[in-house]
Image (cartoon, rainbow, N blue to C red):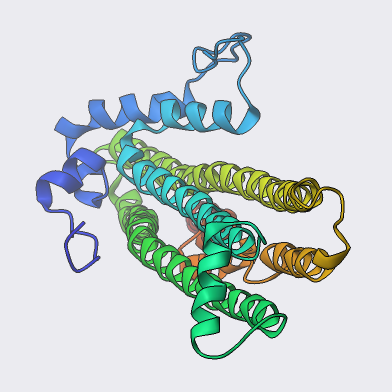
Amino acid sequence: MTDENVPVEPGPEALASLFLDKKEFLNDAKAPQIREEMGRYFDRDIELFPETDKSFLGIRRFYEFYSAQIESLFPIDRDAQASIMDLERKVRFQMIVNIGIKRVLLILALFAIFPWSSLHEEALRMLASVHIGPPSATYALILLVIAAKILLMWFSREIYDNQVSATASVENAAIAHRLSLLSSLFNDLLDEANKQKHGYKVASENPDRWSKLANWLIQGAIWTSMRVEYVERYFQTRMWRVRRTHRLVVFVSRTSALVMLAMYIWAVVVWSGYRWEPYVVDMVAATVIAFGSIVLFRAPPNEIKRRLNYGDWQTFKKLGMQEKLAGHVAFDKNEIWTKEINT
């Protein structure tokens, strides 16, 4: 990636190594390498105990196993897979950091309104200096803490949103670029096959040449469409990990907030010598702050979905492989049928 967050345009050598150029399929010297890459997908056997399943207990989670299997079938697209993996890891890390900041803010807020904390006493002294005495000082402190926490939570959420947007923008551009190249290659190979059809009329000079070339180009088009499909599937498996992390973060977030609230109430009761009635306002305020920390400024998965903008990708569905191949075969059949009638 460049500093401008735009994927680098592959040069001729990169295109050759990744087989993203139609010329590579028309180059006999490159055919063995392309066949080897194709064979990883077309010539695979059923494996009862796949080599990609190497977890400690012998069984991986489905999405981990599936990701590893895709990596073994299409190592040619490892750079696109790396972009997807980078996106997944950054988004998961940002989720964890975001909830970590919210919980640190919750701890500070509860500590600030805890009647016997040094922070609480210092805040009351500051309020007393501006002629706000008890109990008004306690109420003012609670309102200030709630306002400050809401402001800091909003600020934290904005930072999180900007980080996710920046990450999604960079990696989304790289993935979309690769899918666009593969889509163009798919169409180029079919167009070349259509162009080579005219060689059928002079096939008497070299009867096998057109047939072999057409088969080769169609195989290349099918393989290219599979590359598109499995880039999508790899993306899906990585997003499953993001979804799992999100659910775990939500569970930890809610549980930790309730545990902190329970610990706060228990501490107030114990420190007051079980004469907690004068501190009901503090406990109510703590409850409001804790539940506000759970409810306010959440980061639902739909926000990530919206920022990824994958609706613009050249996906397998948009390729329309089945219609294009069916049209290609129908055109061949009509030409052969017409020639037989004319002869």
